[in-house]
Image 1: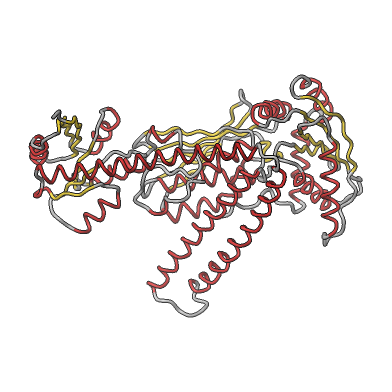
Image 2: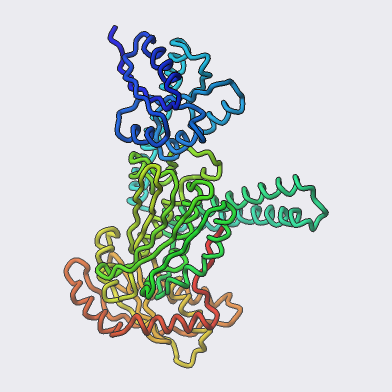
Amino acid sequence: MRAEPLTVLAVEDDKGDAEILRRNLDQIPGYDVDFVHVPNVVEAEAALSRVGIDLTFVDYLLGAGTGLDLLRRMRASGDLRPVICLTGHGDEQVATNAFHAGADDYLVKSDVSPDTLRRAIETGTAQYQRRRLEEQNRRLLKELQSTNELLEKNARHFAEMYETAHQFVEDVSHEFRTPLTVIKEFSLILYDGLAGPLATQQREYLAIVLNRIDDLTVLVDDMLDISKLEAGLMGVTRKVCKIPEIIEHIRPILERKAASREIALEIALDEDLPALYCDPQEIGRVIVNLVVNAFKFSEEKGAVRLWARHDPEKHEVLFGVTDNGPGIHPDSVQAIFERFTQIGGSARPSVRGFGLGLNIAKELVHLNLGDIGVESKIGQGSTFSFTIPIADHSRFIHRFLKHLQASSGLSHISLVSAHIEPASSAELVADIDSFIHHCMGRTDLVFHTHPHRWLLVTTSQRPDAGGALRRIEEARGEENRNRPAGPLPAIDLQPYGTWRLSDQRGEFLARFEQEVGPNSATLMSAIETSIAEKGAELCTPPRW
């Protein structure tokens, strides 16, 4: 019988113990063992990245640290290969720690023999094959989901499905969030001692309950947002916005999360960053998702840096979140933004979830015409970064058209003017601004070019701007039936024309530039600042 080749890495700081392990491995029949020995974690990580290691033995105690540090980093980075933990003495707690960190088996050094090693290798190999099958099943599930989405897209009754999905989101939002809110409120009453004094241990237990309620709320919100994205119900309210205002709005959330995990948070924004043209609420949520994700995978007492800088050549701002965590295994980088994907294991339950946060961040960045990516090195940390276009509307409209032709399948684009009477109050103008944004689809644009005038860019598959006009008029009638503050005023809607995206882009762009006018970004920023000062919020706080 031909011997099976097996490359074994031994992470052992005692040369004598390493030699004993090697001799016992050589005595196992049926294996041709290539033995690689390193004395510490640093050399082990280098060997794992360079050499074709099949299986790793790691000593529980390595100098001042433990082999579990290496094991946790391997699993957190997505390394699925089998690992067997060795220790100098038997202890249930040691065994428990090893298995929780991701070990496949656990051996006391005094029990090492060819027979015990064979059993441990077989166990580790079986566990490795199980993990590979699970990974394969996840990929097959994603392919099945992609096929299903394609079938749904081509279904005859897509409009009915659209409405059904919308109602489903509304119902699920109410059914899930209401009981969660009640549970949290009563838990806070108990925690604050309003229902009577608590013992120290009781307060500790309630603190755990409250943290888990927050985690569950985030998971529910993620599932609801995924439903909105799939159904095309996730709206985008693009406007001219300032980066420091976005950051200051989410800073309390980030600092509170950093303090709870004992992570050092640094926020480094370049000076004189230009204004953006985006949905500030969704960009704030992207930043929160990326920073909190970095907190989860950072080492204890770790550090996370949030930064932003202007790229004048590409007319965009680059945001980044850099951590000093374990890094991401190269095999997992391509799948990191896919839905329901988790990379490897973790020693902390808080890292677990549905694998939706990064996928939602990717979708929100793409809705705002940006790109997102990650750079990572094992053992050194990761940097997640994304781009958002600046408030240069001439440049932005070219970017928007390119995005439409690449992803939407729409064939026509229209310009519509929306105008209200100049006598309208600032509060009413703010309400109209919010109403118009609400009526527009995810592939439409709204430019507030004058205090009482808006320029609408609408898209369709037919050469007709009437659909957007009818949608606004119908929505205004519905709004006025139940509006406590009184009816919205009449909105004068004037179509300027419709152009084919395939061969009339130049004509469309010429008319767009004529209607927007020079210095449009400065004017729109001043208008939106005025609206904000009258009480309209920059964005809704992310749900954490």
